[in-house]
Structures are given as structure tokens and as C-alpha cells.
Length: 406
Ligand SMILES: Nc1nc2c(c(=O)[nH]1)N[C@H]1C(S)=C(S)[C@@H](COP(=O)(O)O)O[C@H]1N2
Ligand SMILES: [Mo]
Image (cartoon, protein in one colour):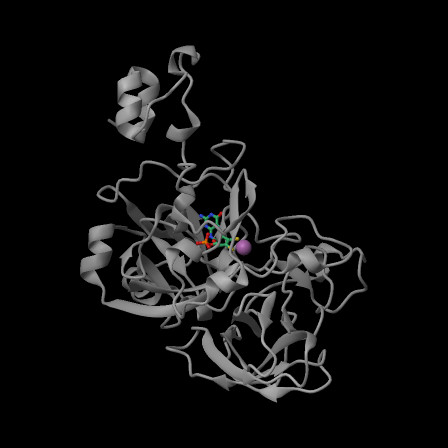
């Protein structure tokens, strides 16, 4: 029996079979009411996320990690943040799923089944860093509306799929092509079928990169429903909003894609810096492309207590959008002096890099460990806050943890 059928033919016995325990006051329940335990997502599993994940919103579902939950080199599903603009689709049948390639600049409009995609094109696997453009929003002042992400809206999972380039080339791209835009099946919160919750994209140059995938696997398994099952666009190093989940259509555009959340202030920042709180005209806002250099201390958790004389081994990850991280440093004196950390090469382009350092503290007391990455262009993370912008995007300030030496 399917959960959603409970409403129609539910008996107290079938509830017990589904949930594994008795529905104690079941006889008092109003006719037609579906117990929360049978609604999606299962409140006892909450998308199979770690119990320390933080729910920022449940309409739509937005759930973030905390720094210490991101300690794995490859982020497991349980610790991956969830960002939805609309409703998570239900009841997907992979056998009937299709991906259409259309748009002004496609040579031949084409439709592929999942089986076509999997059998016609070569499979590739990459570890790709996806960070929400609004990660760190909670720190901006004046505050920006939207999910108040702290540091946990980033993940680096291993994605397997076919290259978007191979599929686009199979359909044929006209020389007029400048952008691609994705379309997905998630519904707008208003349930208005004419409104898409989000439909973003990227310039052809990004669409045609080796690492830009139409993915059907994440960490070696089917993509979890909430992360885009059965097919997801993955474009590492760019705002994760470019990586459309549940996609069924990609349009090859002869102009910058103008879908939902491509225009106005969405995923845009002032083209030139503005004063905090300043009003910015739409035409002075630029689309966010490669994400800025950033890092996260994933061990220890902030609030660590050490014994005097004990050294502290910190570790974490650093990433720099389309670039690599060239240098990783830490400071224990509020940024007046910096020492280098070890930093590993990325597993592949657009994967985050792992760093570590062993820190000795001069005496007992309170310290903060600050981490700072510098990209291959010589640009470093700002210590406290980068430039303010109306929607609170791109906060790549140094991550900081509190430590006591006793
Ligand atoms: N179809 C669809 N794709 C989407 C979104 C969405 O709401 N619907 N949200 C985007 C945004 S803003 C982000 S940050 C990432 C989040 O990916 P995740 O939930 O797998 O972590 O998905 C992107 N792709
Ligand atoms: Mo996002």
C-alpha cells in the first residue's frame, strides 16, 4: 500500500503496518485526514538528513548543514543542504522521464528518454562544489530577505552523468547560441501551473565545459529525490541555482536566458560596489557567475576545549569557483598574523580542496581560529564581510571557530 492511498482506504491496521506502531487515538481522527507521519517528507526521516541539520523553512523546504557536518571529503547525502524554491515533486517514473532540447538556437529539437541518455553518451564522474549564492546571507547588515543561511549551504558530492556538451552537440547548436536555460517539473508554491519556481541557466561557454553534467547519480547511487532525481544539471563552481534539479527541458537560447530568477535582483549583485542599504537599479545589477574564494573549518566544531600544551589539528575545505585555491592560511590573533596550512590538490577541476594545520597556542585562554583562502588570481577572502548587496549574496568572509585552552 502506498502512503498516499491511506486517505482513501486507510484502516488503523494499515497505518500500523506502514509506520510500525499503533495509531493510538486513530478512532478520533477526522475522516479524510492524513496523519503527518504519512505526509511527505516523512517527519521521522526528514529526507534522511543528519539530526543536526538546521531547518530554515518548510514551505518550501530549505535545510542547511553546519560546518562540522561537512567534514567528509565527499559530502554524504545526510549532510547536504537542501534549497528549494517550490514544491518537491512526487511520484516520479524514471521509465517515462524525458529530456527535451529546444530553444531558438538548437539545430534539431530532440527528446531523449533517460535510457537514451544513459546508453548513447559516455558517462563521466566529477566531484563538484555547489554553493548556494545566498550562503552566508545571515550576516549582512542591513539584513537581506530570504533564507538566513549561515555557512552550511555548500556541498561537494560526486556526480555521475553525461556531458551536457555531448547531448547539445547531438542535437546541434546554431552559431547564434549564447545561453542555455533549464526547465524542471517542480511546482510553484502557488500551484499555478503557468509559473515556474525557478528556471536559470548559464552562458554556452560554461554549458560546454567538460565538468558540466546531466547527472543521474550522486555518490554512486540514484540521486535522492530532494536533490533532483532522476536528472539534474550540475555546473560546479557557479551559484548552485544554475544546477537545476528534476530537469525535463533545456533550451538553447539566442539571448541571455530570461526564465524565473534570471532577472531583477535574483542571483544578481551590483555591478560596482554600493553602500550598505543603497537602492540599486535593475540595470546596474549583474548576474553572478563564478563563485568567490571561500573555506570552511570542518574540524573541530566551534567551542572546542583543549588542554594547555595540547596542539590542535584543524581541517576543512576550500574552493574558488572556476579557479583553484593557491594558498590556505589560519590566524589565531584576529587576523594580524597568518600561518600557512597544508592544502591538497582538488580531485578534479571544480572540486573543493582539503586543508589541515597543527596549531600551538602560547598560553591558556580564549582564542578564535580564522581560516583564509587565496585563489590563483591572488584574491583572498575578506576577514569579516564582503561588499553589501541587496539580496545578501556572496558572503565569503573567513570562517571562524572559538577555542578555549584550559
Ligand atoms: N528545479 C529546481 N532546481 C533547483 C532549485 C529549485 O528550487 N528547483 N534550487 C536551486 C538552488 S537556489 C540551489 S542553491 C540548489 C540547491 O541544491 P540542493 O538542494 O541539491 O542542495 O538547487 C538549485 N536547483
Ligand atoms: Mo541557491
